[in-house]
Length: 270
Length: 270
Image 1 (cartoon, rainbow over the protein chains, first blue to last red):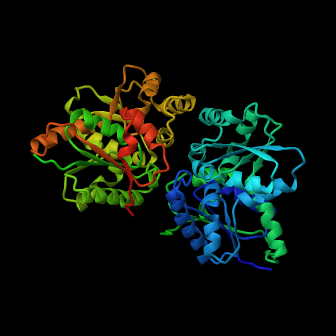
Image 2 (cartoon, rainbow over the protein chains, first blue to last red):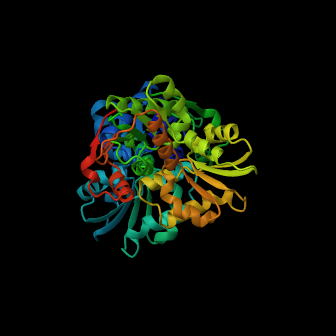
Image 3 (spheres, rainbow over the protein chains, first blue to last red):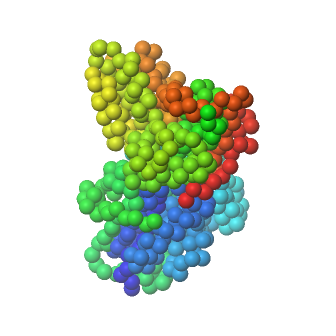
């Protein structure tokens, strides 16, 4: 039993798709969310920069006495998870391992063909490809960087003609390639799930990595006897490093929470 | 006569549209360009953040012994020009004043209807509206923030279906409004000039602010006797704060310079 909150961070509003899943799997946990909106986007920054920013984000969450940290950001997971694990003692997990583990667990004998879409930084890091080939083994990967999708989501354009054309453009490498699954390797991308489905068809499984990390976190806290067993719903506090953004509009719609605004504070993590 | 180079900075590749104009107006000047790609985009960051970043950019250029600084970024001009002028002694100019001055000079007696498109930060600052109303006087302004265009340009999407749909969306407030001119208040936007023209029609004058600052700079250097009168073409050195970007691809196309790659260095301005 451990009543301390779980810390979650992302570059902006994308990680809120992970928060939505964690709230489903772990409704009694208190959460602290940090959106590093001041430094958004992470997707096209160098590894060196991402490590510096992610270290500060994790440091802030630790100062809030969290019991574990979820990197709810594909870029920070692929570029900085190993380094954060080296620096900090508490449990830290990102979106890659839980997803890869679950794919491996359910893998069948035939060769799997998996599409991965993510930011420029994540695709260049080859993190998904390396982990999938090591763990799932009999697998073929097609990767595609989609640098505009996260900025589009931050602006609230997830279902207009621009979003449709962008998804059409970014899905081209996957059309007629008979892929089995597509991994949404950036936490902003579940906001485009319906458009992606329309483009690549119903037969392709769309993997929301937020659901995988939430599922993993539930088992982990149980195994470690770290769950919060109190009987009222968990609360979530939100911190942003810059308030001039569409966080309230986009996240409010996603969580259907009209009181979100009152739970957000500005914080300086420099 | 002053052989020192001119310093120019922007958040990324946008300011290269200004470089292209300065090269036309002042072919004998040496230039030093700083693209703060590590902190791109500036457009949705707070005024406080932009001032901090712009101060560092200007400081770096001064360390390279420039004789004047051009802020080739709409956001940094509208948020940080006044502060930079307070801090530094050398001549500093951005894209707003030269543009407004020229509009005022050519203004006719009838009321002018002017559209302004720019980043979120620039539009929120009301800089264009304030300056135009103060200087041109008989003027009506319609403003529209276009937060996706700069990231789109950085990715090289300036003429595909996504760009077309985005321009269509962003031009809506100007259609059937009988505007006389539209100011491209972000230096990335000249890359979309053809699409903008298609959408709003030939009768609207499209104002490339890079051309206005280049023209202004030419007169200023002449008046101050600060031109470089050497008789060989000026050279340009480029510095980027992060190399993982499409700068070479986009800027190379814009300047039609195949040797651009050899002139770029990474720099840390923290």
